[in-house]
Structures are given as C-alpha cells and as structure tokens.
Image (cartoon, rainbow, N blue to C red):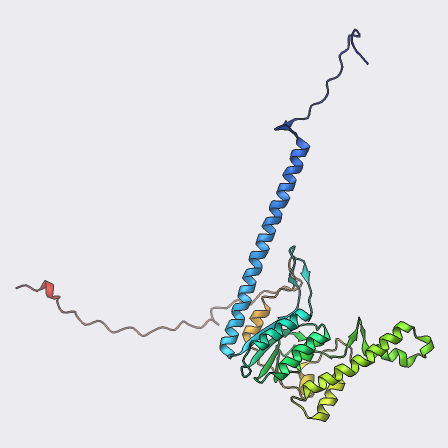
Length: 326
C-alpha cells in the first residue's frame, strides 16, 4: 500500500552488518567449522604422536628382553587401549589376526632358539588359541610363557604348551571348557539331560549337539598338548579336569592350584615384564580407575655413591726443552 500523500514514512528495513558482503551468521558458522577442524587435527596429531612413543617404548623393552635371554620374545597383551581415532578404549581378545602374527613370529625363529611369550588375555577364539598352542608345542627350543596378571580360557590353552609357565604370585589361569556363544557348552548339555526332549526347543537341541562335539574336540586337543610333559593317563585326567565344566569359566587357577595340577610353574618374573605392562594403561583417556603414589626413595635408603681413592700427587715436571737457556 502506498504512503504517498499520507504524511507518514515507511519504516526502514533493518540491515544486518556483513563482512566482505557476507552476513554475520554465515561468517560465524564458517568460523565454527574452521575451529572444529583445527581442534580435530590437533587431537589426531597428539594421539598419533603419543601412541608412537608408547609403541617405541614397548619395542625397546622387548628388544632388551631378547638380548638378555637370547630368545624370541612375543607379547600378546589384550586390554583396554586407545585403538580408535577418538581414543575410545576397546577391550580385545584372541583373534585370527593374533594367531597369524604369532605363527609368523614362530616361523621366523630358528628351531633351536628359545621362545618367550608374554600372555595377558581373557581368552578368545578356540581355533586361534589352538593354532598358537600347537605351534609352540611343536617348537624344538624351550618355550616359556610369562603370565604377569592373568591368562584365562584360550590364554591358558596356550600356556599349557609351554615347557615353563612363569606366573606372578597373584596371577591366575583359568579353565578351558568351550563356550557356545555366551553359554558354557557343559551347561547346554546339562539342560538336555535334565529335561525331556519334548520340553527342549529345536534350537537348544542343536546347541546341545554342537556343545557335545566341542567338549570332545577341546578335550582331545588339550590331551595332545599335555602329552608333551605328562604320561597318557595323567594328560587325559588333567585335560578332563580343565574342560568338563566342573568349574565356572572365570574360576581362578592360582599358582598353588596350578602346581597341584603338576604344571611346570615358576615365579621368577623378570622386572622387564612389569615395565612392559605399565605401558598398557587401564583406560585410554579420562580418569583412571586405580590410583596410587609410588614410594619416594629416602636419603637413608639411598646407597652412597661409589668414590675413587684420591690420586697420588703428580711428580714435578722437568723443564721443557724450549725453555732451556744456552
């Protein structure tokens, strides 16, 4: 509607300030995107830089162990580590990729050279653990497995193939009874024994059949591994104890229990193993779940530095030839 002749002027339209012909909202949006990408680049750079330093420190300890023990040192350590771009801690277990890497390391080791394997794992795939255990059992040189904290399930299966198992006094092994999904194979079979077939679903009957086969297969494999150190009857008895499901899958087999089974247990853990474990943090980022302050070395406990005896006074030097007078 026109305002001409009415004496009133139309209100002026508000003008939004701009920079270089662009409105402030668009400019702020571009600035926020730029800041986001800069921060992301800094985070990725710091993450890659920090992880490379930790890997280098781990390799340095492994190299020192190899030189001191004249052996091939293989570490298979599963825990929460920053394995993603954004530092999210992910727990891991024994996989086929692990077995491929371990078998490659064993294949590159001379037959008579000792192998030291550091195990820290909750277990994992049966097939992968069996492959590693068989390769270690077939190795001619001495095989030593170090368990600084725990080697459960498939980790115990690998440890059984060693000529010597070195455990921390508080470390544990575990049963090697097979698991079908998230359920123990022995418990699945037990259900079909307690119920009539008509009361059990077809799916559960299939699982029970698979479970029965898995128990026989794992028991036979463990028996074969134990025959490296035990006679036939004792190998069968121990394999049955570890695989028939009489224990829960997280049952801790302590040093004393393992010795009672007749396993070749030692407690002489090298300090380098603990130093290596310190390089695997409990969590990737954020607040750690366990905190403690190391003891400070007191002056009384600090040994006095070694000193050399004082050197005897030097004899007077003869005058130099260029200072003699004619």
